[in-house]
Image (cartoon, rainbow, N blue to C red; front, side, top):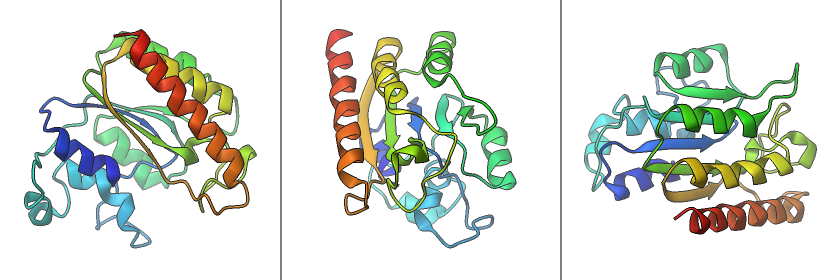
Length: 198
């Protein structure tokens, strides 16, 4: 939801998205199973849901998702999975059956297609559940710390970020200090890469 609001503020017509998240945030009210409003941010931003309410948001314009890249997406129902495909989004899916080369796949996609200017979204539950409880939704098959740091180097090297949103972290969780240190490393690495690739 925070990145949907930020996209309105940026007011960039052809905005690309690089989304590190275990959830797609693309639910509409028609398919949402739990009433969780935060799961609808991207369907709102593309004009699929809550159309009148979104029209009252300053700077709102409906966005297309043909330049949208997920990394680490995995905690989904079959309906949610298919909606991502139908929306024309690209995804580097997290897997439990084998280890995914997230950094390598990210670089490949960013080299194959322009994702500039890019809104970069880092939901910390993209991390593998090995690191503990980021929030109430940890899941297996995610990104490891070293991979996340490498990904934060790669994004500014092959795209032009306009922003970085970091979200969905509960510092009061049992593993809060551990996750906070990983997040800080990722943020610092991202901005160091931005500056070195200007």
